[in-house]
Image 1 (spheres, rainbow, N blue to C red):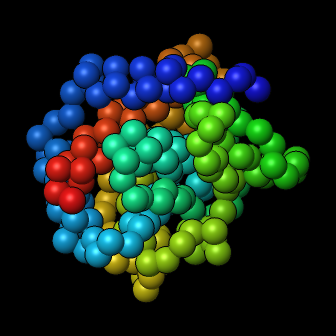
Image 2: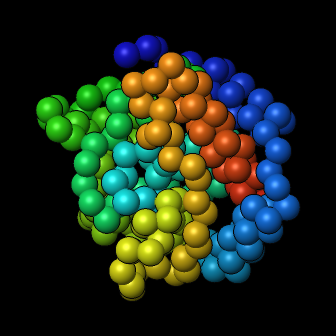
Image 3: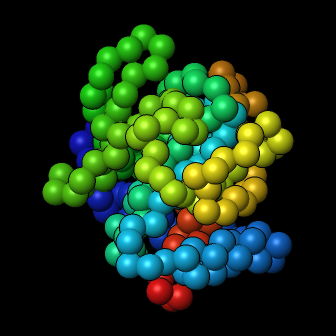
Length: 208
């Protein structure tokens, strides 16, 4: 994989925030999440769990960009992700994150669901990424739940470990797989999620 490039990741994060418009309804939702997190903050780390049906695309992008945003804004937030089914950290999701500077090292090889060690800096801690159930032991509790696709919100059962739960859906880039617009679509989705995580974490920073 490509060498970690912190400047590339930072530039993409900041450029997405400047160029992507977040509508008022989504801003209101993100502000609601930020306020709820701030109210529940008690000098302990905050955990956010992004949940989507297959934990392969949108929830992974949410986790990775939150992982970066926590470092960027110097916030004590841990980012996790999970699904209602286990599949794999989709190769196109890996590709689009790699292209903006993240480094993916295979921590544990598997033909179906490899475990990656994800980093954006050679001197910062890395993130473990793979497809797993939302209640996997890797996901530290208690946590705030952000569901990123309709099926996850409708099918996800009651989660006693959740401090609160919010539905933050994104269009699935899966529809572009193996098409001429695949790379453009995944990059656009990554940018939208990066921009919204910038907005969310910036608001949390203001409140803490």
